[in-house]
Image 1 (cartoon, rainbow over the protein chains, first blue to last red):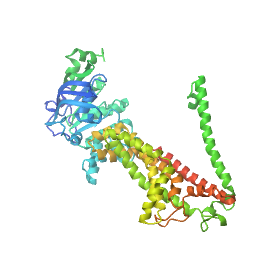
Image 2: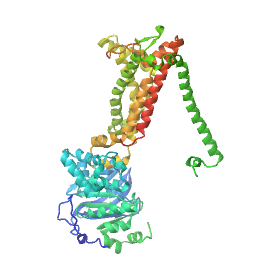
Image 3: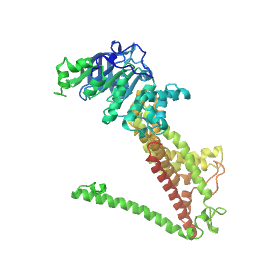
Length: 282
Length: 291
């Protein structure tokens, strides 16, 4: 299946528009520009010299073995590294013209614009409704009517509405793993972000739930700029328009190759990429 | 058929030995508790048999010499003192735990916890000394006589504060980092993370800590005895001297005999039942993740 040209896909009837319409992924418009990024923890460098442009409305997969800095890269895009003691991010990340790594960057506004989905579904121990409402309230949405509308829209967008509409006030922890992960995606979408970061969103799910979430991610294409870390190469091939291959050399993670997903998988230009993709190393 | 409990230990000698040893010691603890309860029942039987519990909740008051054993005044004093102490200690302890967990600079966290642990370890008689020489005269300046329900509440609040603070901090520390990361990734402010995620998730643990503190306050004897004034009366105001159940036992046990003695044991039994009820409640609520 070709993912190289996402405009081949049928346009869906989107209800949420994170991104302004008119920037389909096939016309590369940089949304996140990363220049010479380096991440270190307590003085130990784990990622170095990463430069790439992530295009608007596209799904970009980060692949590579464990420990090569993919998650560190992802966490620096929404400044979640700030939470990790001893972490330091150097280099430049420009997003919509603003510098993410600048000390005066409004981190809360940034994180509202850049949603994140984690490996293990992490719904709060609240009701399904409160899981979505609480962040909305925190960002200033208070009117009952608008809250209800946003909750429903977000749940519809992840295909969860029909499954949970009769038990919105029961615990989110009673949902299945796949439903929990979709709730987490809905929670992020409710804030109307333009970028979604996903850290192995399917790896903790069973194959059926995983397929559902994967289909959901595919539907996000052209609406959001998605950066997804995955260890599942077949999944990267299925969902992504672009792929970035990370590898550890001299104990430091580096970006080895970045390009259109299909060309990277079919004709890798680097030996390390080829070895990893064709299964001879990693 | 295979039972899981038979499969816990391997057939090795050391495992069998350890299982038997820990099992019999655990059993011994349970037997000890049962023996204490049995003793309380036995000793208080003299009164319980003649009129039952009703005798403790009727009559003109606590007049052991004329066979009147109404516990209500002291029960009220005990309950009000415990509740008052909890109402003061809960917000203070919770605030201290939140500060230590989410706002304090790194270097301050450990000293803060040490102070709380030290506070928890101060002998109650020392609290009593402080209350007697500092707190009671202060209250007396405001509204004599000084030794009062208010003094008891303040001393108890101080004593259970570290319990509340330490258990709340442990409950907050147990909030999963996945939840905290998820909350931060949604652009929540520190306040939003604390109120929206950390407190709801730690709620059960904080509740259990509060009940633990209530148990401690209920059972505290010495410090309260030293500051409360020990007059048997239903408190009409915060400045009235009162006597709590524990203090009553400590004060009268040395000379009580016969039915009077049995009545003291019965009030001990009542205290034990109250604490048991709180412990049961703590276990029931503490086990629930989501409410």
